[in-house]
Image (cartoon, rainbow, N blue to C red; front, side, top):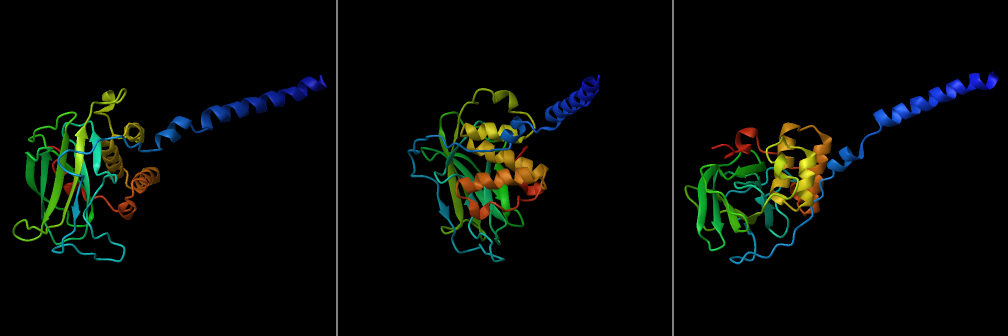
Length: 253
């Protein structure tokens, strides 16, 4: 009888332990989804050029504070080329402190034929700006390389030494398992899947949308910083996003 009475608390303790393990242990799926690790694809160099370009010029760039990045910078790996699954993708560019109010955004194919061109407004404060190819523009074709550029207009018109940045983009088909998520809300899980497939432009834009929606979420902020640091963009890893009014400049034309 004494042994039976002592055995009851043991079963209760075991049950409580199992309850804690099942209901309060964090799932590995959630932790894995937060790891946005970019795997660069092997892409041949575009035929028309050796890669993207960057030109600071000396007309209208300025560093207001110690630590400010004074260069216009594409959010791209060092190869200056990235993939997208979007027909009309979004490109992220860091805009430094500048007196320029507008810039010329252009897209060309490998034969240097003009695909799209428009003058756009720049944000009033330095930060990461998103430029989306609008619905009124022709979409980019799968398997083709396109070069985009953003040139600041420092005076009344574009000049030879105007600050400029450019990069390359190629559209690919949706990897397996991602097509059904194309219109879903942004998530770290989707960003993680895109990164593993080497889809740079859409990975970084997913994280940018998450940062915009949850600016105080430390997990999202950490994922953003780690991704930029991994491709050598440490100098702008902590840069703010441009205000929402300019952030999706051509998001829904």
